[in-house]
Length: 250
Length: 292
Ligand code: HEM
Ligand code: SF4
Ligand code: FES
Image 1: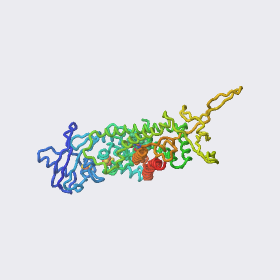
Image 2: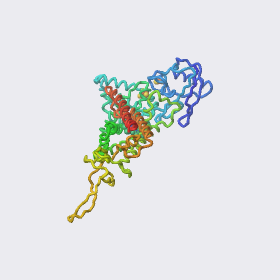
Image 3: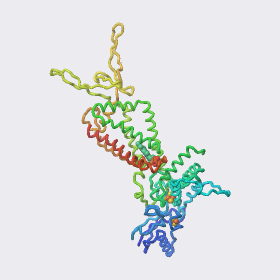
Image 4: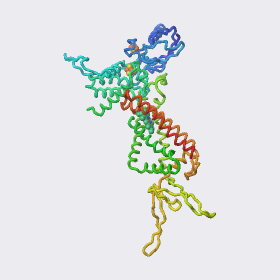
């Protein structure tokens, strides 16, 4: 395959950045998108140019690092996949592909396609934890009975890999789907009930501080989320938040 | 946002049911029913509270909506070069602020057309009149039915329109007759006596605004731009429909009401509401244009 790539190049966070055009040839349709990027980078190095910086780690859809906005969609075309799971057979010979970093005030660009997603870590640190007994009499998790349905929902929420595709695609650049998954996975379980109220208030407060927008229920995030996190979680977050705002001491 | 939005949806239902009287009941009964309803809506203290709640809701909803939208726009300072939103959400879900602002413009226009004239205008509103057939002497001999115009009072009486003076100084139509008073010396002195209050004829105002004055009953100059008015109203209702197509179910999600058992119901009711309510609103000016 022959492709024209329009890639966002930006030296550092102070640089303004711009789109550069590259041509690549001999791309196999069996390559993953990241392997295609590797080919491009080898070509650039051979030409004595700076390779394109991009994030990646597991290359199997579980770490959430490979943030790229491809042809107007986070992780490119296809549903339920990350960029590393996107294959070149999704494109046609001669295609032009736009590759940009995820855009949000909460995700400042570090270099080229790499953005700083530590805002998610800070939101998680603000309340995404539970208190457990560690003083030698740890309670076996399986000793606490949990309804199957709740366990399933909590597990579904817990599959969020923090990739940020929800923020990237949202017209409001809202992080509600991510936070709702993190709040839900704990709020649904008895172990998470202890800090439930403080948790939701603290995480939402941190979300606002990080500069993400407000959810207007368009549902774009649910469509683009590689893990199929449901909007049901956002409703749960809204419910938890309303409840906590009214009844919490804080 | 969600609470004011849903309150406004309730308002829409009430407003629609009231307005459907314009076309639901034919003839003079319809006119009387509508003008009585309009009178009730402008004088009842409970309705007054509701109407202030509605004004506040619209203002709060609009200001909050615009502020949120501006904040959300700022949350992505550098835009994408290539964005392809079409494949994941419908255009109206992405255009709530534009649709809402168009609704706001419509609300201002709409209030200037009817509410302002009903409430504050210095031009007095026409007064509700009915024509009743009365047997009268014909100049050609014999007795013939002739149409005589009567004002209908808030007490339910009829007073002959030719024999009373209408006074608008208290911002409502009041009927006066000349009344001869005699003192103890049987000296006559003329005074004016109020014998009743009438209804403002909003029905005719609306019919003249949208209609082509087929019946000439309004006694108001017909609107030469009636067709333009009808088109603007119909388009505005389409805008409202799209706003609700997203807004109705969105409000439930905002309030955290999302349950596998009821989601389908909320979605279906929301879509039905977004189609039925604006369509019924839009039918009113169309019917008036075609028949009055
Ligand atoms: C009769 C008139 C109106 C009705 C029935 C109505 C109804 C609604 C409803 C139910 C929602 C969803 C709320 C939510 O998701 O929480 C909504 C959202 C919205 N409305 Fe309206 N609305 C009306 C007029 C307006 C006006 C005049 C504006 C003015 C600009 C406006 C701007 C917005 C915006 C920007 C949103 C999206 C906000 C968000 O979801 O974050 N609306 N509307
Ligand atoms: S909710 Fe989905 S899209 Fe958002 S961060 Fe988690 S996995 Fe990624
Ligand atoms: S590199 Fe880990 S999810 Fe793509």
